[in-house]
Length: 471
Ligand SMILES: [Zn+2]
Image 1 (cartoon, rainbow, N blue to C red):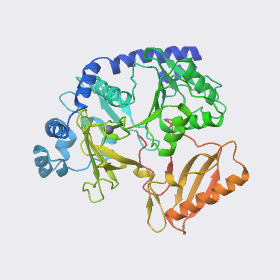
Image 2 (cartoon, protein in one colour):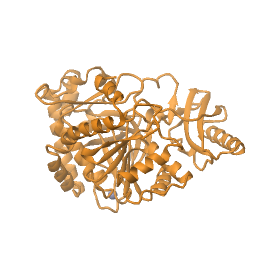
Image 3 (cartoon, rainbow, N blue to C red):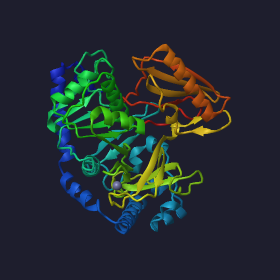
Image 4 (cartoon, protein in one colour):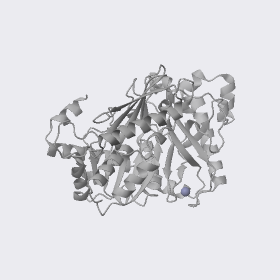
């Protein structure tokens, strides 16, 4: 724990609000100052590019990034072969190797544009990495402002709101350090009219305090962890807590959003839910438009979805997501393996934007569960559909033969209901992974979060799964 964190922990609640606001002011200037406004204008202008304009724009951006990598970034200069360098010179991404996380983890500065290293004010962000060393993502303030601007235009903006409007955030920040706190479970950032919620204290008994905070601070939109907002929504529905009338939108980030989660939230909050899909590195940015399509922003980077042979997947076919940054050029990542699975849609979106659309983000590669006969399951959410008496669940792969499903019961779940649920879950797991799999259902009071407050839908104890990241 850093000195600042230790200090923060010792402050009384009112001091913590003040500290959050002081930090918030500095942070606001960093994120929403500088070139933020110009970036907002530029992203807004490109919003209506047609396919041809995007194609030209991206081709130029890729060429610039590849030349930069060839000339000024030690990692690419030292590791690309002569053939790969020649591919880079002709702007051909497919001729370049995929970038793993390990070299980036080992030496993040080896990826920095050497002309700017040391001369620019550098900001570091870390993947939360519950296992292994976190990876440092290195940014300039201008890049941070651009990444906020794309959110202002294409997350908040498409959802009909703005970062200038009061918002609540569920994130990994330890806003309420005392695990036994009796409330409040939020801290106020006056600088941005924002409240930070603690994902660690949310329970049926504390839910009303979260909703009270939304009312008291006139919060107009919610952003952050999808699972935390779904849980809060479920508690509100169970306890018949009405939605704060001023709520306009929910923009979920960081965790997979399923149709069921969306439905629970829209019912409880009385407004629409919009999904955002991005990563710590911002190698990829996708957000949901007014017509419900998850559009990739081509001015943030080039996104490829590849099959096992490294070939581009056709629309509707799930593959691995690989991204090349074009917006962030201080530490450019080229053909970076994000560790996510997704598929393209070829459907035309009624919003009229020409940005590519993701049909589905299926989950992280380490979310794969395997059966004894080798079959794999990525989309396991079907296991939970329509289950009664279940608040949340986690699938633990103990071995190739053994799956443990950890379930948290709702307060109203009777023993009879639990027995029925156990039978349904076992049945569904065996349907998907074969009769030979041994499925054990365990009822637990809660499912622990990662250090960053995130929910892990799958935990695999198979060899090779332990070193993956959770960003
Ligand atoms: Zn659209």
